Length: 380
Ligand SMILES: *Cc1c(COP(=O)(O)O)cnc(C)c1O
Image 1 (tube, rainbow, N blue to C red):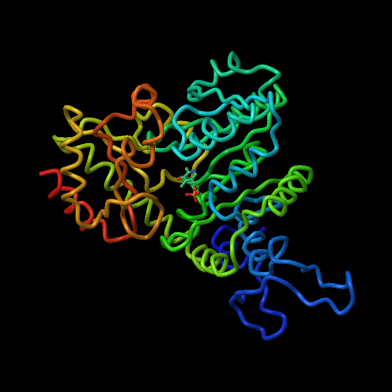
Image 2: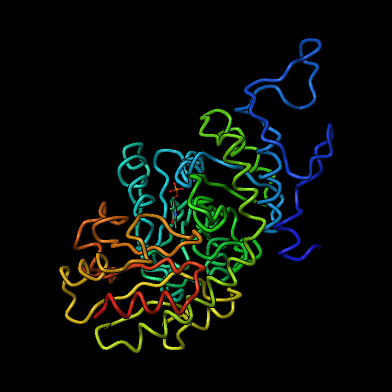
């Protein structure tokens, strides 16, 4: 089997059969000519299949060591497709510090269709069984989580899901397939916001699903085509191009992340730093076991936890642009309580440790000395 960096560049990709073009062409077409009804080369209509999308889906599948990959118009469209596997009366057990948009689609869209969502702390596996029942058809976990950087034991949780017959989905957006491969640890479906590290250049919105199960693949491909939240060939091209440097970018994100995390930890105005690479991180040992490195996402809380202080820091940062999203080559900062996680009520949010002054950093791949100087100046 090819190693990761080789797969990122080559997996699923063949020279174009008509010209030999090394880059997968952008098949910007909605339909395909048939010489006679039903006689086609596997392509009929671009909602169902498109050659640029096929190349990307095969490439993404290879990165997660998966048999199948499917792309969607956004990470949430991919999540939406998974939720359509459920029926009224089914229950979902989800981790309690999810990406805000995931929390929103669960509680504001699918709850109205008669699906129940239970949000629990999944960090302690010994206490997880008490939340299961035969109604729990799906378990949804994010690790590292957004924005608290909590770590869940994927292999351990996969074992519990098997015992109770629940499908196990992991949102692997923060780690990327470079750092961890949940399917190898027993997950049934992996979800990614391709928008983030995978595409990596802040120029595409896209999502994907990977699975090894032929049964799930058949159902999910049916949903992809029937609901139609597909991604266009231009975006597929951009994602394919971005992925070619995923391994190199992730190495630098991790290196820079490590330096920034240690800088923040030693700063007198910083109260807490959330980063799974610290030995005292609650589940550091699990992170070390299931991840190759600790990634470029960090969140931190200021001394006295004052919202105004956090706003001042974010306004003062120059290199860390204040913006939603993450995982691009450029560094970003964000304020989860008012931005990505605004949909979550304050009490819920505080229960999960998401304090008012919590700032989330997506550490980019710039020179780290410049990033640290920027933070030093902004913290004052
Ligand atoms: C951004 C994000 C999503 C949603 O993806 P979109 O592409 O924005 O729809 C889901 N999960 C996580 C962890 C994310 O960061």
